[in-house]
Each structure stands twice: as C-alpha cells, then as structure tokens.
Length: 252
Ligand code: ADP
Ligand code: MG
Image: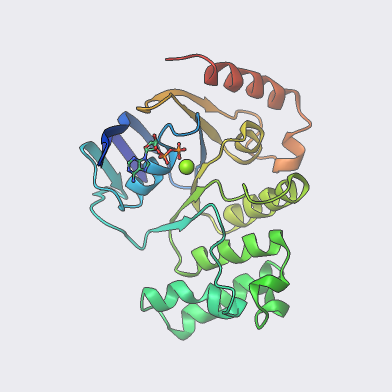
C-alpha cells in the first residue's frame, strides 16, 4: 500500500480548550488510486490532509507513506490548496518553478519537465504572463503543474475547485482528472461536492461528524475508467449519489 493510516487521531490545543478533530481514522490507498473524501463541514478533512502531508504530528495511531512512517513533510507528497495561491507579481513560469527553488531541484532536467507539462496542458504560450491574465481554469491547471513540478508520487487536493463557478468547475475537474491520470499519480481529493467526488475518483470515503472516523467506503465500480463528464450521465452515478447522500445524513 502506498498510503496506510492506522487509527490516526489528532487533537488541536486551542486557548479555549482541546478540539478533537480526528478519532481512529484507518484506511489505505494503493498506488495509482484516486480517492475522494467527503464529510460535513468542520469534521476534520483538512486536518487529515495536513497529517498525511506531515504538517501535523498525530496524537495517536500511525500514517505510513511508501512503507515509511510520516514524521514531517516529504517530497513524495504534493499539496494543492483550496485557493491556487499563485503569486500575482510573478510570471507563470516563476510560479510553476517555485517548488523547484524551495526544494533545491533547479536542474535542467526538472526545468524540462515543467516545460513539458506547460506545453502538454496548454500553458506554454502563457509562461511569461502574470496570473491575473489567466482564466480561473488556467490558474488551477497552473497550480497543479506547480505541484507536479517536483514530481511527487502523491497529490493531496483540498477543495481545489471551490473558488470556481459551476461551469468552470466541471471542465476544470475534467482537465485535472486527465492530468492526474496521464501523469500516473495517486490522488486524495477533499471536496464537499458529492457529484465531484463520484465523477473524479475510484473511491469515495465518507467521514463522520467531528471527531472524524471513516463512516463508509464506496468503490466507484463501473465508473472509474470513464471521464468525469461522461460519468454524470450514467445510472450508476445517481445510485452512488443517493447512497452517499444518505450516508452523510446518517449520524454514526
Ligand atoms: P474541515 O476541513 O473538514 O472543514 P478542519 O480539518 O479544518 O475541518 O477542522 C476540523 C475541526 O478542527 C474544526 O472544528 C475546526 O474548527 C478545528 N480546527 C481547525 N484548525 C484548528 C486550529 N488551528 N486550532 C483549533 N481548532 C482547529
Ligand atoms: Mg477544510
């Protein structure tokens, strides 16, 4: 297994008292899998991604990536946050190569990889422009390319499309799905949108109210080879939607 969580637990120490965010989270993901996480607002989804990324040390249980316990940030994991966090005063090129600078990977080979990604995903002609000159969808692709530039095995995506309007969201999620597939990445996507989870992933985990536990684990049988837009037209899509909706409204 590429990612393995065993009874992961996390508690925030806030001035107002303790907040138990995660309780007993166990699941594993195989290499190449695309998994989504849905759950009520505030249940601990972002906390879970931070813990996997090695940004929050656990209070109990364990997380292993590639067979090694997570005890801090690792280049094996790329994180794509809610807002694209592109720097407006930097060009697209300087934005997408930022991770290479931070990880001291400024080699000709890495630059060639970034050029290939920009070219392949329609941004090559925009390399010298500023983020404000790009559409919302292009910005999101740019943010993904920045995350891919350091060549992580695993992508963690925390509600990456929530700033986009509905139409853009549909086409961007389809683009991003394609890129993740073509680049053979393992992905874990947090979203509050059930349709988005079903349309993009091989598997959907439903988290309970805080403190979060894994309440259900759905495998998108019959859908996972289809692209996100095509999935939305299927009978299976609606069946999964109803099952997940019901699960989210059942209090474990
Ligand atoms: P989600 O992403 O599912 O909306 P989060 O993981 O962001 O939820 O937060 C889980 C819970 O932990 C929430 O109740 C939130 O208020 C609380 N929380 C998040 N960050 C902190 C923090 N730094 N200090 C104290 N409590 C926090
Ligand atoms: Mg969150």
